[in-house]
Image (cartoon, rainbow, N blue to C red; front, top):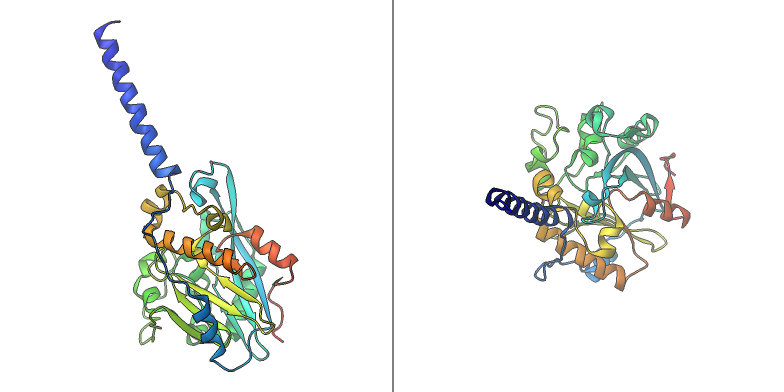
Length: 308
């Protein structure tokens, strides 16, 4: 074999090894670090709820406002390249005389060409419900969760009921292309809390930075004792929790700029919670199958109706 050919083949072999290692590292590898930890004390959360008097929500409604499609490995590292649906939800907790909105999806303008589908009627119902809500909560400051708020046609009417956290206010760059109009948050009093915070009867906020600086989970206890944990985008699908695998590093490092260690700690805590407390419904940010299961179980109702 000519020397030049040996050199070329050797160089190609090195390139293949490097490329393979890079592919594995950025697309497939998702081992949980042993040191990843996160506090999720369900006993403390329940005691905090019990200490606050008042009516709890009687039902939970949702609107499927839009959807994205992502490769499976972008959602759960190593799951391949088949396209997966990523629905975008808004939830409403219905109290006897009020309502609470969790996440506001996005507007069609903000979604643009990124969305695979957009339901204008669902968006209109959500936007109208925001105007009468007593409280609006955002799991984190990404466009598909906060965009319905930033792009609301009457922002001054809905902002007083909105409790953005200090971290969500401090990181507008994470919301782009969603953004508040210039001066909209002048004088706004953001919410600051350590790890847990009661937001209303039956609702506890749980600080969970990692996916974004302002990420938080929202625990809900209903009138009949049913417990629901909205985890935002700590996991996009319940499968992340089942198999303890993060999104592909290519996504978390270059697009989302996640604190990967923090998210792994949260996934571990959620996995432990699911095993210890299987009756708690854990709702990831974009899991249409899970939402469908909860509809069949009678826990969620599709469509924002008239508050009771």
